[in-house]
Length: 216
Image (cartoon, rainbow, N blue to C red; front, side):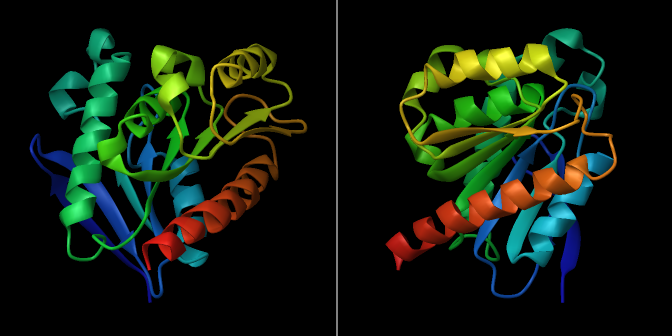
């Protein structure tokens, strides 16, 4: 049975949605792109599939309601990464998730924030998946990311493909770029988001399960 719980993440009271199932292999925390949040239908779709595959999920709003229209904060990657780190701290202490290895799923600008947060050893991140992401926004932090990272980009999102390729050159850990045929930036074309699900699930199964085994 899968339970979804609405909650607030300290210390800022960020709105979150924790999804729990049985025999979980890990926890995937979502970092949404600009103008999006925990109710994003695309990330909700991915999260539901991950829960069905045996992962807990945490979708959260990295900005408070009174911050969402502040463009400076929307694109403040360091701020978003700090908030993602706060959520990770909470997950490491929360009863239902404390023993689970943590992975990040970042979309668009959220991927940059996810990689900055993953570069901080205290967050103990086991794997990262980026969907249509902007890993280049992580800047110098890319060189400190050790978590295995999967970058998923649509074949028609040519500018973002180039940005991902450039970012990969700065990363020293395990990394892979997967191109989804016929997909644009938002993966709105029929079947393309399901391909994202397959790729992300496989990556987290491989790397978060390995992280869990190393803790045993």
